Image 1 (cartoon, rainbow, N blue to C red):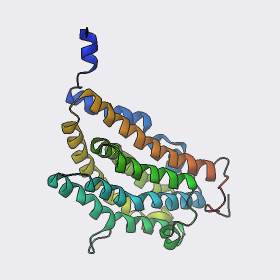
Image 2: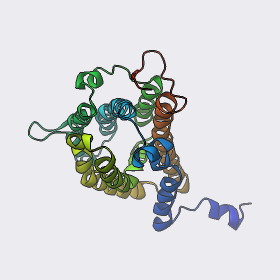
Image 3: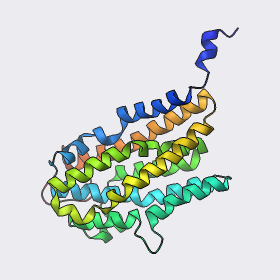
Length: 251
């Protein structure tokens, strides 16, 4: 016999509570709290450490359109595909406006590294490759709901980007020519997360589906955190970059 308590455990969460759960995950797990980011925002990173960050993060940025294209290819809803295509243009550009990937290359150059080092993936940490590949694989193989929900880290990115722009300008003024990426994402990330959240709330109809959406967001947070763990280990403490990785001279 099913008891009332057992039944309630399987009821879907009301929309406000479901949405609040995503924000709770972000507060606990989003990478704004990672020690590497804390050092960055306190002005405690060296140029070499920022070079390593920009270089490795480019590898992630360059794979975002691949992730989004895989997600689009899995949808049979023309309206969804039309809405999600915006992300491809935002990152790849459209021939008249620079996309996020090109803007990130300008950040790489502002750190003092040649753009081709990033484009060729020279010196990328093995853990960065594994984490980025894991994200593309997740979006390509999990349910469409989970794939969309994994993008909801963008719910929390505006506050981090706002802080980052301020702190990078203040502590690392030599990066000023490379900050256009962040300015653009202030509006793009909000637009993207609004659509994705609306879609997930609409399509997660059961409690099990809601829990899958939560788990997808946690998985994405883990992927972002793991990338920073690798940077911290290789370039901050114990500052031991693996063979084949970017080897700055001042570590």
